[in-house]
Length: 280
Ligand SMILES: Cc1cc2nc3c(=O)[nH]c(=O)nc-3n(C[C@H](O)[C@H](O)[C@H](O)COP(=O)(O)OP(=O)(O)OC[C@H]3O[C@@H](n4cnc5c(N)ncnc54)[C@H](O)[C@@H]3O)c2cc1C
Image (cartoon, rainbow, N blue to C red):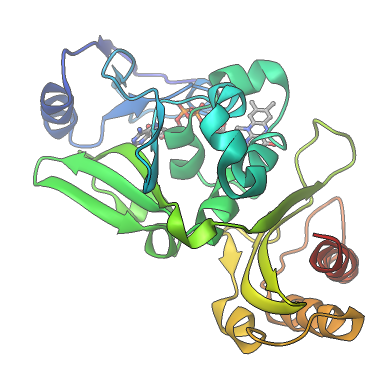
């Protein structure tokens, strides 16, 4: 419950929105789909800033880049032909792992990447895609690479007067790739215990491009670029797939939780990862 909530702000454009946040000094926060905000218990938040009607709901393909507005919902991602065609449907596969349809209709891309939880689905996908997060604040606009954005909790990366406006992805790097995004959970709509995001391109059985990110195993999503690079040019067979999976789980940070032990998560992650690498 927001115990001291007094004001709701509706503005005409992003520069007015930034002014409202600046004036609030952290006591006014942007409102995405409200699936987290509605459950917050806080005495500090005094105002909510509406981001709807500021033109931030879109998925565009300009030929070179995919651009996703921060107020785009998970359902809108799932409905997008651009997303379906891009990188073997990678982002669609990631979006399909998010909660139930009712939640997908509300959860926004901006809210999903700002409020990191163990179960957040889009962050590992955006890490694999080398996405760029665009923000606007009182000091102007800036672009933050996903690697930096997810290197700590995003609230420590953004200032209180900054708004995520867009996520941008270069298309060229992902021509002809195969991809998979697997959520391992008790039921289809339950929070994931493990999330595994893989992008792979092969040429004559050899690995040309490999990207592996894990979610749900620790508070921050993890990518393994040094291990990925080691295998570029190698012929992919069962032994190599097993070796990659083994190295990844040995390097991954894994925290225990009430549903599964660290050992169990390691074993399951290794087996699913190996299967994905061999099957896509
Ligand atoms: C039952 C349930 C199941 C769920 N299952 C999953 C799941 O399987 N996978 C998954 O990924 N998520 C899941 N979620 C959603 C997840 O837990 C978060 O609630 C959601 O990602 C937050 O997005 P939102 O748009 O609702 O953000 P909000 O609740 O509106 O905001 C969250 C935070 O982000 C900030 N924020 C929002 N938009 C912006 C912006 N544009 N710029 C700067 N800051 C911004 C807000 O100020 C706030 O601090 C589930 C949620 C529920 C309720």
